[in-house]
Length: 451
Figure 1 (cartoon, one colour):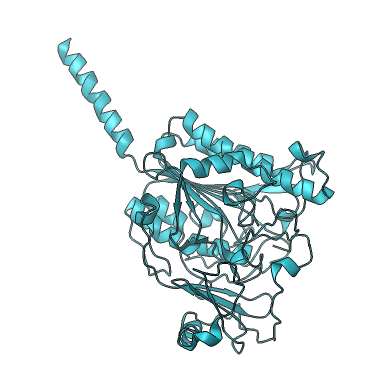
Figure 2: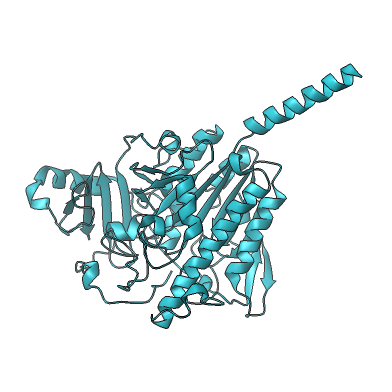
């Protein structure tokens, strides 16, 4: 009898030890076209986001984090591959008729492949936008065991679609079902199904990308606002609700303390109304190379490992995610990437790690480049355009171009813009002259832009 009790005790102890040493689950929640100033935790006053704000209070808020690009597809490519816009195979939004986008090559190595090598279950829900049905880079061919959502980001403009995709199976719908709600349920279902093993979940929600559609206006029905702004606010609050449901489920299943959750946006705000001030104090919007176009309202939460209520000044970007995960799960990368691991800064917000300069480029309105080194930020419109220079330490809103005062910095960025990239046959440089973007306070209110 004593031997049986001892055996049972040792078995329970071993089980408890395994639970504490099991590799962490990782969930990456990606909003679509959410502005830096659209969350209460980042200064929003009118749109209610209590669950994401609580996530920030329970984790660390990163106030100098960047998306992978200023539009959808190249941003997601950077997240998946660890490559910036000057080296990534996808550098812009390019449609492939009748449904889908330019695919990545079959041999592309993604962060999902890395997780699979580490023994993780891998799932993606929401919007893919990095291939087309039957192509070389559908989610199931890019390292994901399970996918549910939109293969095509253009089709994702419609929240009441006639179909979605489950892996390579077309799921017919009635055109009356709100897609985000289906995607949220599938997201929760993946977590439940994989509760007993390490998993990686890429929850790429489509909210608040246009169209402006939502089943109900929630707390905004009686607001004295234009109808489209009530709808937009209700969409963001619906997203907030489902982020909360994810966090609640982790607690319910007893896996909260072994799950690292990220929340980010894929690029700056597409919406430019003055009421909500979507970019906060930052200059620019989606499709701009200024901070409002590329900075992401980012949060990381991992109870017991990432400090609660902290604010980090660490600079990081989507292409740092792959090398960070490589360090986290102790899996080597098969080739060099542009990103660096920022795992120490995730775990200790007081750290501010040195990192190589950031680089971004944009091909859909001529050719734009941006880079950041330390607190210096440079923007150039066209390879023959003047280099604009901003000191983000004293001027985060990029109101004052100080290029004339710092010729050495201008010279450095001019050379960096030349060497930071390689040419791409798919995205050749377009030298069409570009006017400077208007300051945000002078920009007319507009609806979200394509993709």
